[in-house]
Length: 220
Image (cartoon, rainbow, N blue to C red; front, side):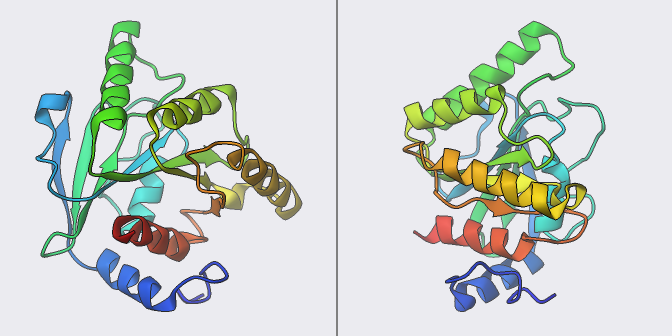
């Protein structure tokens, strides 16, 4: 399957090609920020990735950037405890931000509370944040903890888009139902993009569409 075949109807093929080239080029880890004072200067557009612990965020970031080890993967929920920054493009075009997973992280309550404050403060105060991509496991769909996060984004007026992960783990009929239900719910949220992207890190499904969506959010 070519990148062109994997695009959503109505997608801009020229932007898709630029996105393909961009994600095939230099992408480098910049830094981990355990607190707001450690964030890089807000001079470049940022695209953040969020989701429940173990939703497949690191695997999706690796697939998105066509690299095996850019983002660490772990079977232990809550491994990402900081905002991890990656520079995309040379010269620099934008930054990807890997956010701490929310939900049932295996960590002390005070540490989880610290993560929550970090994420909340980042989302509410980061002017260069162009869009947050909220990852949802296709096998489970939206859960209450996801809805709480979406409501927080709505309140903060942070533009976001839902991305279904692990689509290869679900039967086609079940996936179609989850996709439809998730889009119907997304349309009820004022800060949400109405269209949901379906992805599989293992099979490459939706990766070209996601790359194009990231670049579109940066450029709009």
